[in-house]
Image (cartoon, rainbow, N blue to C red):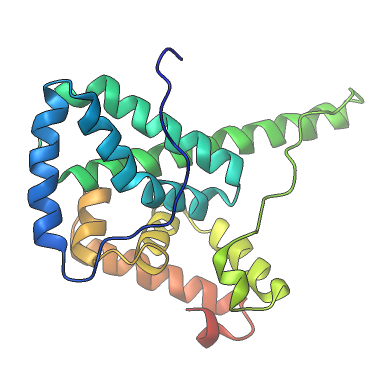
Length: 212
C-alpha cells in the first residue's frame, strides 16, 4: 500500500457531554479532509484510531487483525473521503467501515478454517488454521479468565447484526440512535437485535446477570 499511516494505538475517549462540540469539530475536519489536508488526516487518525481499533477488536478478538482493520479503515477514508456525501456523521461512517471490515475478516477466517477442515479430511497437509483468538481484553481485569472466555465465545457465535449491535452498545457504549445510524436501521430494530442477543447469551451463560 502506497501510503504509510500513523496508527500507533493509544487510549483516549471523548469527554462526557462533548458530543455537540465533537460533531462540530468533525464537520470542520471533514471539510479540511476533502481539501486534501494531511494535517487533517493525522488529526482524524489521532481522534478516532482508538475507537476504531477497539470496535474491530471487540468483534475479532485478535490484536493483529484489529490493527489491520484500523489500517484498512483509515486508508479507505484517505482514498474515498471525496466521495463521502455527509449524509451520516463522520463518526458513523467510520464505525460502519470498521464493522464492515471486521466482519469481512471474520468471514475470511471462517472460510480458511472450513477449507483447512476439508483438506484435513482428504489427508492434505493442513497449515491454514488460525492461531487461537487473542483474549487479552480489558474486561479480563474484571472477570475470571474462564468466565470471560465463555462470554466472548458466545458473543462470537451471535448472528453478525446482533454481534455488531451488542458490541457497539455494551463495549463502545454507543446510544441506540448511533447504533441505528451505523447499521442503517431503526432504533426499534436495534432494540430487537439487543433483546435477542441478550436472550441468547442468557440461555448459554451460567450467571447472565454478571455479564449482560
